Length: 214
Image 1 (cartoon, rainbow, N blue to C red):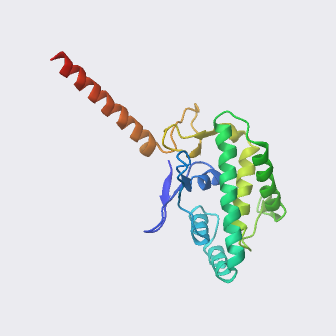
Image 2: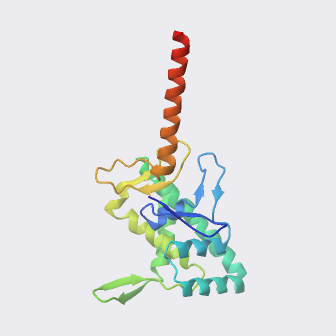
Image 3: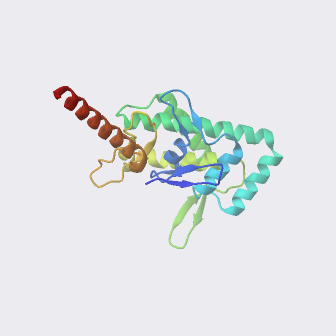
């Protein structure tokens, strides 16, 4: 189940199974073309990264400081990251619908990932080697999210990407249920809401039939 993380003014929903999908879900209402956004500024972006455990408190402070001193680069980094969010959404939404993503979208995603891969460093942990990224410039969030998207795209988990079954929700999630039958991004929100609608529709229909019988 997704969890809310945030302060009094911001709420981020996290926990749909992959960092890149969590980031896609920072925008909503693509269905009606009236995007509601929880990330409007670079400050919002790094707050989300901190909530998603992509940034340590020290990294957060470093990027916050850079964003104040490099305003032009900050705007560009935010713009590119939002562009990445929308291409990730288009790619995985297509896959969730059983469609092949557009070639241009796959090419753009590959471009973002290639830029991220060029900054990766090979480091040795206690048991093995791993690739890592340093939070040393303003495009760090972009690189981490791009890496997450490509990791998901080339894995078996990509077959578990789903779009919420609610007709009013466009969120994506990773179906990690054993029988692969999960339908909702959040059962307590979208699933419960639809069940409530069906229940009240059934009650109204029953009342009409009773009134007609009388």
